[in-house]
Image (tube, one colour):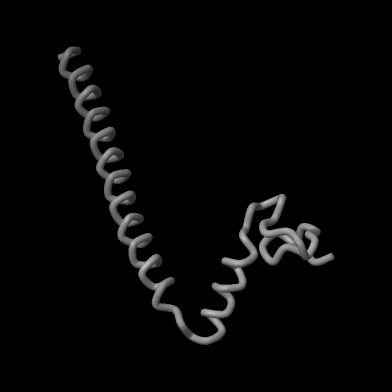
Length: 84
């Protein structure tokens, strides 16, 4: 018996994927081989796509936060003006 390289769950040699976390052992071995040999081109493209998506996500979250603050301030100003 071995342990899953990702979550350390007990697995047998016949298992193709971890029953706990679902990692595919063939893909894990392929990634480890590529990293050890320095062949990172496949993973750099994934990292670039992920970081670009992350930047858009941050931008959208900030835009909604700013819009919410402006809306709140407008409502507060409206209430203050009502009392004058």
